[in-house]
Length: 235
Image (cartoon, rainbow, N blue to C red):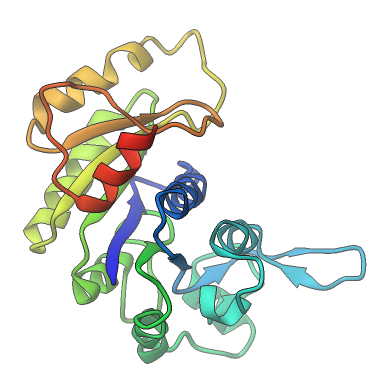
């Protein structure tokens, strides 16, 4: 099973949108593609008062609406705080074993798997493990989702450097238009070039606001990750 781990420079940078886009693109190339979010907090409630998690539902729709929710995300908590805090508020604890076992549950069910973390790489998943710790255990290539706004250069470089210090392969940075363009933010037109300059050995890809295409921004950069090569070739 081919796997990529999607993380971000922060929360609310569009990780779920990008993860779902990757899943849909891979399905379109003929790969049975699954979605795994190890733990999720921050539920909403339907008209009958039943909790649901929008990120999980989006991933489930992209990967196959008939899939069990527990397969997509086996650990779900209500409060919109870090998972171990949300779990504690319910008198529970996040299971470290299940974080990893939930990943392995996919090994015979898909050709490819998109794993989406929570927040940035130091976001706690449990009282002992962060997103970075789980990514290191899984040892999959990492895609860093970064918002195209002022400050992204430093945040992205810090994230890429720390991932590499942990021995992880950074497959690409996806510069995401997570919000409608802010004309006052002049960095939007220069961030891609700056990222390519400072991390020239990492391909910088781009997703426009609510677009379905994933494009490589610098023609001299070479994609080596096989899943991303399949996706970009069809965008």
